[in-house]
Amino acid sequence: MACRLFVKPALGRGSMARRQSTAARLPLAGVRVLDMTRILAGPFCTMLLGDLGAEIIKIEHPQRGDDTRSWGPPFKPYERPTSSKFPGESAYYLGVNRNKQSIAIDIKQPQGRAIVEQLARKSDVLVENFVPGKLAEMHLGYEDLAKVNPRLVYASISGYGQTGPYASRPGYDVIIEAEAGLMHITGEEDGAPVKVGVAVTDLATGLYAHGAIMAALLARAHTGRGQHVDASLLHSQTALLANIASSYLVGGHEARRWGTRHASIAPYQVFATRDGSVCIGAGNNAQFARLCRCLGLPLADDPRFATNAARVANRQALVAAIEQRLAQESTRQVLELLEGCALPFAPVNNLEQTFAHPQVRARRVVREVEHPCVGKVKMVGPAVRYSEAPVGDRMEPPPMLGQHTEQVLRDVLGYSHEQIRQAVESGAAATFRY
Image (cartoon, rainbow, N blue to C red; front, top):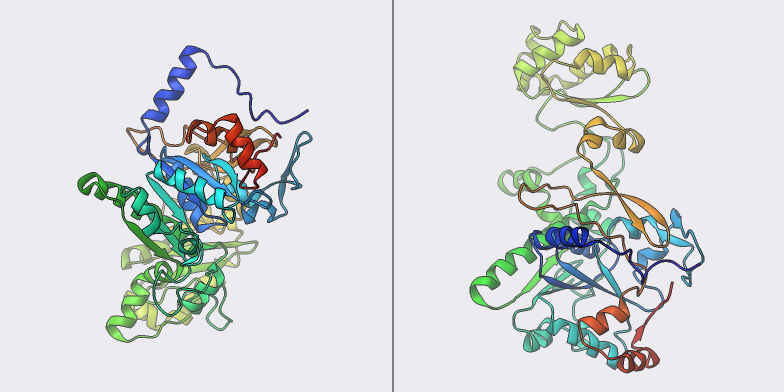
């Protein structure tokens, strides 16, 4: 039995009207985005635009698709036989590709490039993450497509930006973490540099690009013209150094690793309990006094800890006293002691505990969509809620490779059945029946 990709369940008039009404009320309804990105930064950016109602047309290589389709395990296995060469849909791919259509186009073929140009003529935004200059070699660069569609917002996501001596280098999250200072400040004080546990540089660049695209769309509303948006991992990560960068630029202070500690606040770190860990912060004298009272520690009146500056200067003795106290209790007991003390604290949760968190559940952070080939898929939904727009109510499952090739060529470009057949036979496009 094949996946139900081409036959959608019939909707009654009321259901259809509600669905159309929801789509029309989304902030980016009516905006078409041509997505020529793969892996994480770009797909994360376009997924955010899709969550806001934009129509996302994802262009993928006809054989291998987005690189992350093969990045596993884990894979969500197919529930019925398919023509897919993958063992299932990878969790990595599923995590950043909802609310998109997939078309399989080979841009190395002349007709494939022609299809991209035709789609660009009918799009509001194009997002790409090729090495700078690569698409221009194919006559699909910003200058080329701006000639056929002056209103096009063309967003490029790269490792190092479109100009400069490193522009032609490919960019990778972990490499930029090392190169742009993040790895230098991450890790234990006496340990080696380490990377952040999630690809934060990729994700931040996707966020920057997503905001820049919307700003460019607003600018177009005034000028009538699109523009080239140049986002890079290196610049994004350097910007994320924030106050650490400012300390160096203004005061000449070289940064260092602090583990979970804070350079200028104490106590403000993770402490071990008898069976786990908790993170505690006391950012002012009142919070410190409450912490001491809740833990039964006679430290609030000690002149060594009378002010935050004194606590920072005597950090070693302070931390040792708190560590000794917390080591006597379980994590649960420590949390009970701190509850109601009016200071920031939290357990160090694993993912099971994170997704079981009562606030995570209450806010419906996790959503579930029905995928036509792998069944129900859980995913983290949009992070922001809007009072006047049903963002998150519209959740389409991540597409199978080339699932919408025929539909897009027919409905967006007006291709006839014969034109689609010729595109497929030439190798410029691929259609699939799952």
